[in-house]
Image 1 (cartoon, rainbow, N blue to C red):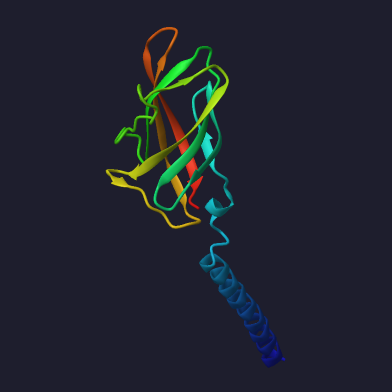
Image 2: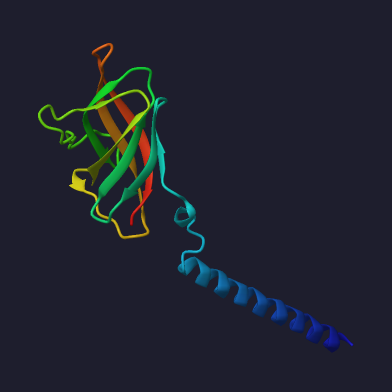
Length: 161
């Protein structure tokens, strides 16, 4: 009688052992395929201070960010420079190409599309298609009513295409 109980216990352990082993292999395979990588399900995000938004943005694998900036502050502005980096330090700011002043005037509720090279520290960013760029966008501008220069710092998450 005791032998039957031991055999039953061994069959129980073997059945559940194989089931757990198969489950572990399947979960390992799914992890290896990147199914549990939440970043691949995220869309691009651009978080700027009130008065600015990014209706569309994209990044190529060589680190060029194309961004459409919508300006909705209470006064017109002149964009004087912009930059992009993985950390929150301003490096390699670029001036808009708009001769003769190399500034872009944006009226209230207007938008402007520009392309800027993003950096990873001191080096130009490069990423594989499908990966994400996590960094910061810097925009220097002058308020045309007050004449004061200001800087907008925004957080970016962009899928590399």
